[in-house]
Length: 83
Length: 555
Image: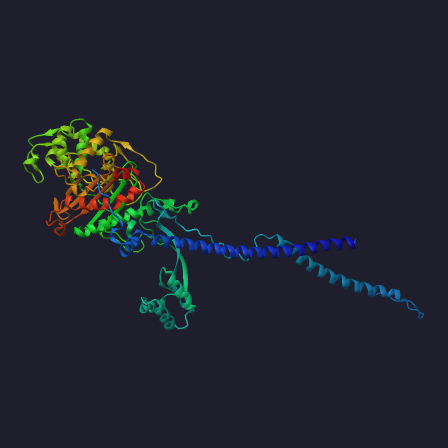
C-alpha cells in the first residue's frame, strides 16, 4: 500500500518538475515573442512616420522648389503643332 | 492512570512502554501530516500554475499600431491625411525640486518657451503643458535632458502632409478625433470604421494637378489683385473631381479659428451669379428643342430691350451685333440675342432645361460645406436674365457639372471626390446637340476664328480648348442692387472634339492688370481665361501621361 502511494507521489513529483521546466521554456519563448513584438511595433510606428515624411519629401511643392533651384529652365520643351 | 497492584520487585515495563510509543508515534504523525499538507498545497499550486493561461507577466506591451482614423490618399496613393503618434512636453509639479533650474533647462532647449506664464501656471496647476506636438528633434532633446519633472505625454494627432493644398476639401478634426469640416466630417463614420482601419480611403483627386492649379491660381490672384479665386477640374464623363481649389486657404495642420468670410469654400459653399456662361445652357436648350440651329440668324437686334419698365442692355453694343447667328450670339456674348433665343424656345422650356441641369438643387458632394442656390419664383424678367446668368445664383460645383453634361455627349454626371464612386449619369441633351455646342464653344476659344471670341487667350497649342466666359456684377452688401465689384468665370473643356476634362475658373473681384495687358480691362477674357490657359498649359502634359487620347492629338 505504502509503495503504491510512494509511486503515485513520485509520478506526481516528476510531472511537476516536467511542468516546471515546460513553464520555464514557455516563459523564455514568451519573452522572446514579446521582444520581437515590441520590435515589430516600433518598426511599424517608424514605418508610419516615414510614410508621412516621404509624402512631405515628395510633395509637389517641395519637388517644384527643388526643380527651380537645381534644374535649368529648358528641361521641358513643347513640340510645335503640325499643320 | 491505572493503579499498580504488584507487590514484588518485578516491574512489568510492557505496561509502560506502549504508552511511550503511542506518544512518540502521534508526534511523528503530526509532523508528517503537517509536512504532507504543505507538500500538497505547494504541489497543487504548482500544478494549477502549470495550466494557468492568464499568467503572463511580460505582456506589458500588447499595443498594436491601430490609429483612430483611416488614412486618406489621392488617386496616386499620395497621403492627404494620416494619424500618427506625437508627444507633448509636460511639467509635473510634484517632481520639481527647483522650478528655476528646470525652466532654465527647458528654455535653453526651447527658446520660444514663455517662462513667466509657466511660472504663473505653476502655482495653480499640478501638470503644465510646456510644448505640444514635439518634433523628433525636440523629442530627442527632452530625452537627453534627463530631467525627472519634464515628462513626455504620448497622444494621437492627424497630420495633413500636403498642408494648404486640400484644406477646403479634406477639412479638419477636433482634439477628440471627430471630423469638424470637409470630407473628415462628411465621412466621419467611415473614417473611424475599426474593421477597415488599415485600409485608406482613396479620393479621385491628384496632388500634383492640385498643386499646379493652386500655384497658377495663387499667381493669378496676385496678378489681378483679386479677393480670391477658385477652380474645379472634373472628368467630363464620370464627374470625378481631379482638383478643386479655393483661395484664400489655410494650412490644415494649424489650429486656427477661421471666421472670416473670405475663407469660405468658393467651390461648394459660396453662391455666385455666373454671368454669360449661362448663354451656353440657353443655346443648348433651344438647339435641343430644335427651334434653332447654330447658323439660325437673328436680325435687327437692338441695343436695349425692356422687360416691363426694366431695361436690359447689350454689352458694348456696336453695329456688328445687329444681325447675329446663334454661334455669333455665343461668341460675341450678346445679351439681346440670348433673350431672342429664349423667346423663340419658350420661357417654360428654358426654365425646365435649367432645372433639369440641377443648377438650383442642393449640391451633392462628399463635403459638408454646401449651399443651396437661392431660386426665386420664375417670372418673365428673371427668366430672360437667367439666359445670361443674371438674377440667379449657383455654386461653381453645379456649374462645372452642368457644363460637363453639355460637352460630354449630353449626360449629367454625379460629382464626386471618391475614386470608387458609382457612376450615375442622367441624359439631359442628345449627342448631336452636345456636338454642335462643342463646335460653337470651340469657335469662342479658337484664336484663328475671325470673330474674336472672349476665350481666345486660353487657346493652348495642342489641347483644343473650348469654353465660355462670364462676367457678373456682385450684389451689393449694403444696399439693394449690384455693387461695382465683379466675379469672372471661365467654363472650359478640352480636348475638342470629345472633351475629357472640364475646367472652371472663378476670379472674385479682380482688378485690371496694366502690367500684363497695358490696359485695365477686367472682364473674364482678360483674367479668368488667361489663368485657365496657363493652367491647361501646365497640367496638360501630366494629364497626357495617363491619357492616350491627349497624346494622339498631339502627334
